[in-house]
Structure formats: structure tokens, C-alpha cells
Length: 136
Image 1 (cartoon, rainbow, N blue to C red):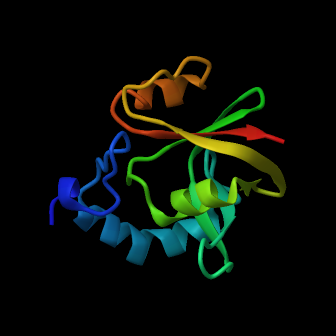
Image 2 (image 1 turned 30 degrees about the vertical axis):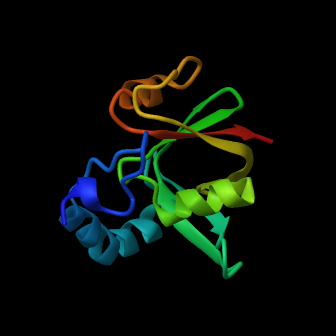
Image 3 (image 1 turned 180 degrees about the vertical axis):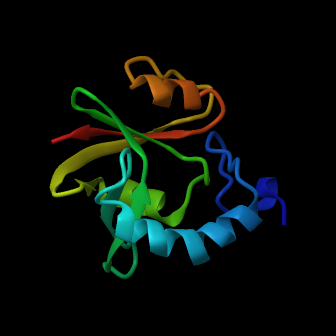
């Protein structure tokens, strides 16, 4: 299955990584990175609630912050954690030992208006959708 046929590939939120890379990341890389995220520069963990199960999940992310705005590039497309955060309307982002509560999550589609976002999010938004949220 190609990236363009993958279920995570949504309009405005293209999946730029091939599905084979995503499978390797989920199976091998994520378990290691999840343990290292509290001390890895630039890495954070997002704690979100499942849409149907209500179960709490944690996913490693690379967020960019500017003032009270948090942006996360969505290179894997519109994944389950993104759908969960959008449905709940909130989440916790954990940076090492501190955390921030995010609200009002929304997606800036690839090539959309990224004015006011952190520099790296603006650069990535040219080809990748970006999840943007306000820090409460």
C-alpha cells in the first residue's frame, strides 16, 4: 500500500512517510523513544484520551512552541492520536518533568496559512499538515 492510499492520508494532511517506515517506527522505534522522550531535546509526550474506549494513551511528538501556541507537524498524516485530540478538544503535553494543557486543537492543512506559527512549523507546513493548539 502506498502512502497516498493509506487511511492516515487525509485531505490537507498528507502522509509523507512510506507505510513501511511507519510500521518500523511503531514496532521498534516508538518503544525506545517513549522511554527516552523525557530527556531527549525537542521531544515531548502527548497524553490523550481514546475516542471510543476513553482509555488514556501517550504518544511521542516533536512540538514547536511560540508564546501560547503549540504546533506539531503531522508527517504521518491524520493518525489516531490526532483524531483523539481533535475529538476531545484538549490534551496534556509533557516536556520532561513539566506539562502544559492544550485546548482548541485545529489542523492547518499543508500549504495553508501558517502565519503566527513557530518557524519550524511554518517551514514544515508547506508540505505537511500541522496540528495547532492553544496553551491553557
